[in-house]
Length: 161
Image (cartoon, rainbow, N blue to C red; front, side, top):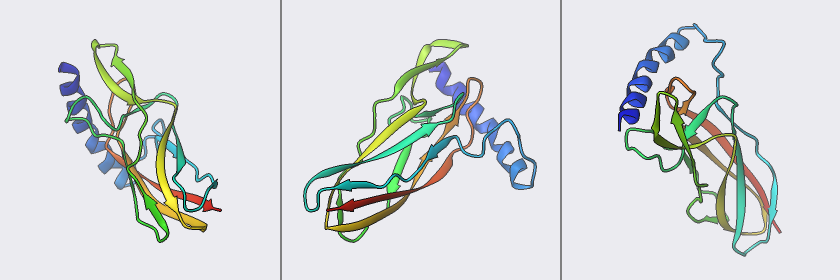
């Protein structure tokens, strides 16, 4: 539990960095976004259950809490998609996270995403082109600190034939 308290304190200490950025002071060693997503057009069968995959990549040197972090003090990675005409979406399927520990507390394990990860969206869609818009909310950390939560716009494109 010490590690969770440390992460909460580190996240709280990072909040002033956001205020400094808001007034024009940038930290050049910190990326503006910690996760990259590119809309990849996909084709599925119309009127049948199908799965659309959303591919994300966490920037090297960082990790984000999984969808189910091991503490309520940690902010989960969460994708919210808006409804779209002709698309019935089921619950998103998040991947399992991987165990991660800090060198200063090696016995405490966090549940995180690092590198590439895929969220699956089960759908049934009418024939035609579809676009779902949404946001991915996450909290990124590196080996020393956790940063304030961020929101990444997501656009899901697919054609049902």
